[in-house]
Image (tube, each protein chain N blue to C red):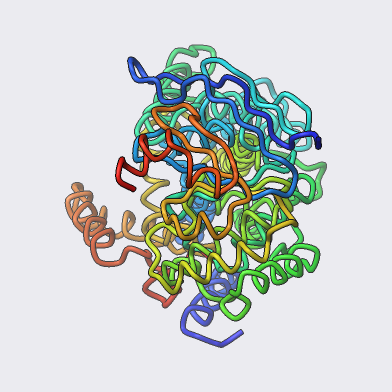
Length: 313
Length: 249
């Protein structure tokens, strides 16, 4: 492997993420901003599997963040703080919902797929609004984070940071393996030509559905982390604008690139943080910026770093 | 008499008022090259699409290797040994040439719910893929992007992908479409070399290619088969001359 700009930058970003709490001497605010960015990066990576590699333009991916976060919140609401119960349930519910939503939405293509994924997600958003027991539009405050029998203490913000970082590394590694596995190649080839895949003998539908469920489950993990991180969950987490932000992160970072969504999520959150310091209407600056990225840097940040124009890694 | 490999019986397909396939019956014997010719709009591509499973016929049956496959989808037919190439070049342009063929091998090497091992260095996929590319004369292009191949080479890749599924019947929809004279000659040579190893149903407009390759020819006019026979018999068939080649041909 040649040591190019792209690899150097990627490694530097990972090292910076690993050392950040040490460098900042434990300054909670910035550690918090970056931890949040890493959680959203996990969500963006999962979206990238179906959006970037599989060409399934889901506009309702934030729903799985909500499911993960609500799992933590609802269990905590009933004084069940055990992470060994909360987390497997959160992942399983995410997978089940993704299976259901995928089975429905994958019957359609193109604009219809976008609309249906969005409609299903909005349905969950309104479900959240209507649940008075769980705070309706106010949501739930999570007073106690997930407990892991004293093994890990998530109440310590540096520990939580490293737990998030660890999951991010796992997700990236898993995705790097996945996209070059037999399954990954099926998903990527289907993006180019679905009819051809069928003619070659692949039952394409079940591979796409599996990818959809996988993406939903990984995003559910991001939701579990986010619920713990913010100590709070409300229906807004599932709103379609949140799903739109995840798409921004993927496009900004580089569709169909392993590390792209990490760059995208960090850039997105840093911009949001600093621009909203300058003005309340930070989106006025952010919107044109995104348009420029889409127009002039179609490979996103990872493309600017010199990634070749092919969907390899 | 040998049992036919493919048996098409009274196939009918309508699009609204248009009858695209009209009571079409046709047999393909194991190992033969069977050309289907006919004027534009005769229903050749619609016929291939029904054989491959992309279109459902309104009536009639298709038997392959003695089993009724009329209701099977394209993937299931491919798994039973029926491969097709497309009239419009249909490859995975953003993947390498070898990736394209390796995927065809992978499609017939069990399920693909394998998430971890690197399929791009898996010799059980890559070796057959490389061998097939060698066979169609693309051995030295395997690491390039499929989208960067010249048109003629992409047609060769199409053929390689179909071959890599180890079919017993190849449906070739105008394999020489859009090719120059040299490229067509090379394609004819490739298909000549395949003769006898696999049965081929060939739809082609280039009559030189058809008469050079075919063991038998069926003539399609307005969705039905008006004649089937050896190239010699078809050349001398009065109906065919009238309907297709023109009165003074």
